[in-house]
Image 1 (spheres, rainbow, N blue to C red):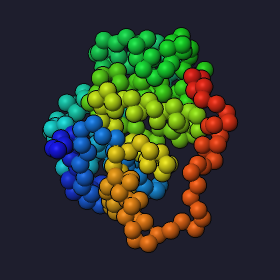
Image 2: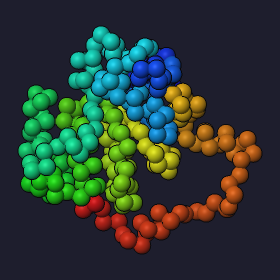
Image 3: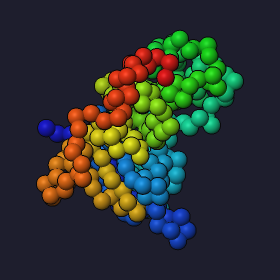
Length: 254
């Protein structure tokens, strides 16, 4: 079955002075998938993400986003992508409805705040100020703002960092729902369980190079086939499962 490429990165290089942060990496992202960029701090994944988002200039290489060339059509790319803002990007004293109208004005897009907030399970917080939200609610609202311009592709940079297990799983469900509505999702994360559960494919980056690119299941199967064994028996549940089970599933206020 043919898969349409919505992102093509070819021989991408990013230098900061004499330091080569991204060393000629190449990969494709297919329409409708959740694609993970994984790597330790300083591996080059954030630089790669920011170049695709049109936020950082590359040193060399080619980047195509939904058929648009980054060098020649960056403005067209900006119209079809959604980029998750960090918390510093919001006015803390404005309520959620006011913030949505503010960002919609920047995009020159008509918007229905109640409908957008319903998508991220925050409709009851429409009149709450941003600073009054919990960590999980702030992250869900941040993702809501990426959807204002009805993007074809959204970029999420470590969206669940610092969240408790309930809020993390709530956000996973939201990301799956966004994908099911036709968006392609590119995500960075330091949580390997998150990548394993969410991502159709992952690129593992280390020292500026891609060292593996495949589905999580295939990467795990290849490791097992190499003779790798965990030092202790793998159980059918983990401590996070215990926590979720014991503390309930009421995620509305997370």
